[in-house]
Image 1 (cartoon, rainbow, N blue to C red):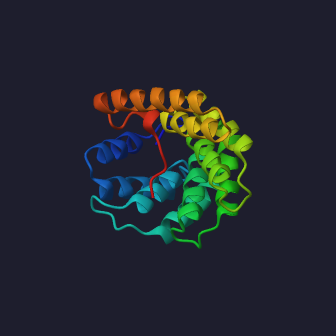
Image 2: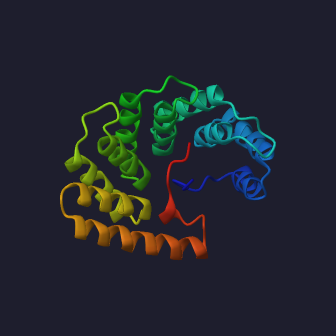
Image 3: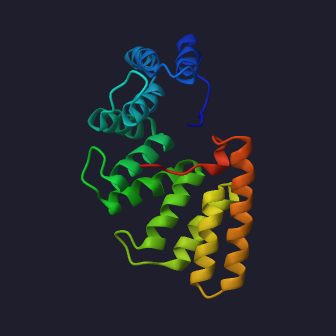
Amino acid sequence: MEEPREIDDPRWERAHEAIQANDYAGALFLFKAMAKDGIKDAYTKIGYTYSLGGYGVDKNHGEAIKWLRKAYYEVDDAWAAIGLGRSYYYGQGVKKDYADARKYFYEAARIINIDIANLMLGRIYHDGLGVEKDLAKAYYFYRRAAAKGNLVALFKLGWVIHEKGEIAKGACVRYRAAREISKVKRKNPKDSRLRDLPE
């Protein structure tokens, strides 16, 4: 998760060090302590920690939704909007609802025009999830995500170009994206250019 800003509290850095050390329970303790002290930026971190689970924290989608909603409605946090969109897209902690997923992904794109929000909006329109399939909108959102460096979106953009009838051009875009994905993955599998929204 990208940091919107640095928090002037030593617990913030310690919590991120705990995450790097796979001590999610320790990080969750620190984020909750900060939230209790009025540091609202911790809300999203708490929500994601519950959503992902593992490393000493039980996955709890109900708690994740609670904290992500607080972060979205009280802080207008784009990452909270992404988390809520993901929850509705996959039906985690809430009933699967592509219209609500789309709403939150639009909000994240509005707040900071983040690549993952555009990628997911592209998927919704490309696959016709809760909307009519719309290749023009899919192209628009994949292109915005790819412009931010997202290689998954670039690969998907190649498929849209193919489906629009430009088969050779689409194949070239997919090939270029696949080659770049492979190269980046070898260097750093956690590179932000490979960012996707896993279930």
